[in-house]
Image 1 (cartoon, rainbow, N blue to C red):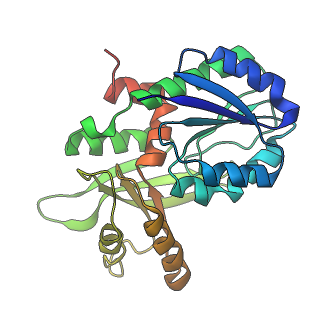
Image 2 (spheres, rainbow, N blue to C red):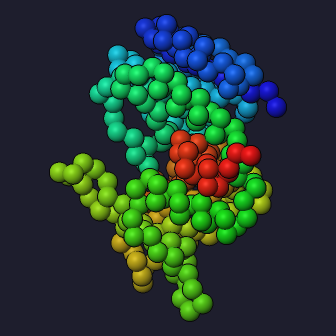
Length: 274
């Protein structure tokens, strides 16, 4: 399959974007730089983007970070629905700290361009190398646990046994926010490994219809799956959250692949290069 790299940038960052393209030569079959200076430019770009094998690097510096992060936030829903392979890349200081719940994992460097280029190259290579379908069910469960550990979750406990079925696979905790204003959150995690790439609305309905009134009702709920959520499912979830005030965080195959690609230890453990 032909893989093409598209580096998007504001005109103020085009020189560094072209330099990054040169650094990434060899990681993909083809590459190009697209200057997108207005919100409408990104709207047209994201809506016309249909090639699943293309990889988009949204390049920005500290000068354009505020503008670009707003754009990516505005179009996050569209990006997810189109299942675009997209890596936000930031060169410079004064950027928001990336955490597990950031919609798109962020690649950044405070000032070393070569370091940033290496990070981006490694992320692209890892992403193309990772094949979720090669894992067995038990391996996928272990992978999910390792991902959660690597991204800051604590106190991970398996909740199923021969005697008790809580309806969820894991319990864990996560401390969100700065040290001064951090909040500890308790989470229930449901893991769904499916043999086909597409997740269904029925899978979502089965999860949210589980009765939590009598146990662990104060926990937040997370779904982690290797499947891809269709546009219809995202529309269904948006409407459901409005009607039922539903709190459900989803890590589908799209986001999971990005999280793994940015962590060399996870790639080496579960998807080792030959």
